[in-house]
Image 1 (tube, rainbow, N blue to C red):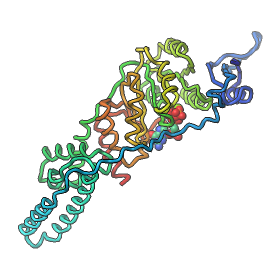
Image 2: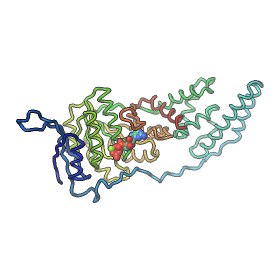
Image 3: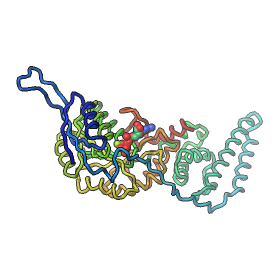
Image 4: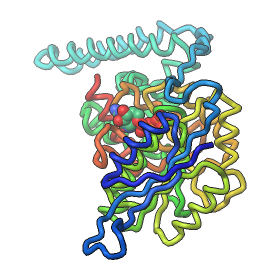
Length: 402
Ligand SMILES: Nc1nc2c(ncn2[C@@H]2O[C@H](COP(=O)(O)OP(=O)(O)OP(=O)(O)O)[C@@H](O)[C@H]2O)c(=O)[nH]1
Ligand SMILES: [Mg+2]
């Protein structure tokens, strides 16, 4: 391994020199600001001193920069089971009859309005039939009258049918039935019921590690959190990155750290990591970035896990991008749960029409949520996962995309 130290007036220039001399595979081991100038110099200049290393054996036999970070996709989606229960058409007819009786009672003046209400109710019924036909065991006749369109909507935004069913029956039980036609009122109620599925996580340990597959937004989320903690909450923040896989990744994080004037340490080995935690022990919060690992690459996952295993001063957050398939997110969780995962961070909520999958995932993993990211802008597009905010994001996002 070649280890060299470079000095330059800016971090960018230091990185440029490293790239020129050691190439793209170089790893940044540490950097600091130092005063430069001879003893007799009148003015000493502050420069960056960066130590970089180059492992002469390229990673995995190939130059690291040539590695394309593949987005994790899984084509083995289980085929949905066909319906077991047939839809009871008598029941629908019975409902239509009820609606007709209502028309009769209502008198002629209101007939037109009622007819259009009925038409839309029938449309909702049809949609609901399609949903129940497709898979899970929901008996359509049990969906309370007037709640069909809300059931359909819950399914549209990605909530699993069985949870959608629970939600709408829960809402129907408690809601003021005279206001069932008021969509906004019903949606607010739905939002409250949906919020009950979420629990907000508030890390109690100060070293927060962000883990997850490649490209889910770990580094971006870390930068957002660092900015919020430092600028809004006045905390002393430090950053450690164990993502030394690509110089670009180190570069990206060191740039964020530099802009925010936050100390940053690059650590490669378990020993380095321990030392970095020790070095930053005076900070209020230390955010740890990690290299993205595919949940299918068990060998590399274990390498990553070995850095953190047995270290009990860490809060571990698993970052999941909501625009990937729910099954993939669950697979990822199952692989990463070898580590004691404390909570989940959801990202890319802005890139999906089905944010309701967040609900399905928390039900399956039984994990609280730390924060939710809904855009690329640092530090604005993130929020702490207060249950009501998450649930209204689910409901609202569906509306915006719908
Ligand atoms: N739309 C959207 N894009 C996001 C969000 N979070 C991150 N991104 C973008 O996703 C891309 C990858 O983000 P990174 O933060 O580099 O992801 P990472 O998990 O650190 O990636 P690796 O380190 O390569 O594993 C970047 O283009 C980000 O701007 C989000 O909430 N919404
Ligand atoms: Mg990253």
